[in-house]
Image (tube, rainbow over all chains, first blue to last red; front, side):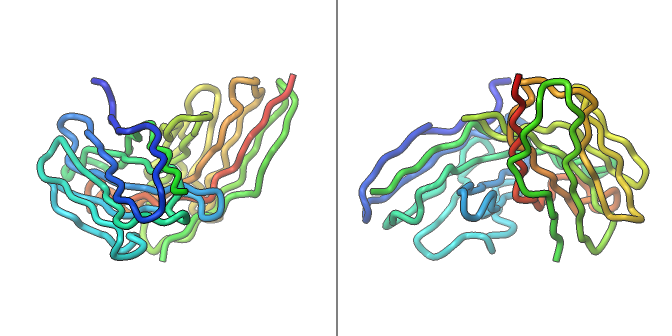
Length: 118
Length: 117
């Protein structure tokens, strides 16, 4: 398996522009997570999905952020309009929920998208 | 709510030195505990885990024991190498045996480790 795939790896944009980050989870995984990492705030969970349904979006900073998962193999995180304070590395992760077995909840992370908003 | 507290970094050690990175947690139930490692320019990857009290997770010479009485999960390695230089994250999940897998993780702030020759 290729692992979690994210694109683009780097994105530089100007304030006010729309930014779309993409993620392809590991095939067969039914949970997908979006995180943001900055020096100031560390690693923050933004939103996560189970079977393509958003379960918890309490970490989404504001209405400028939106996430979708139209099918089991694709998710997007959109920022519109973008601001300089959105500059960060955004990670996508996926995992497989095993309801019948002891959980260890291993999440597999993608390489991240480094976003710079000028 | 759940929280994880890690020692501040960076931690700088000489090669072959002993490593301890402290991690304590607060949780309402019986969480699973994890250590993730992030190498420069990469995403996080699972280093080791423990799902119940007194379990010891181990991998690549690293170990951590789930101590319920002290709510701790300290990471140790007997002899570090330059290649161990990375950021280490302690994390917990409340998704234990009864609730199944896939629940969200609560991460600590990360501890940067630098190993020098």
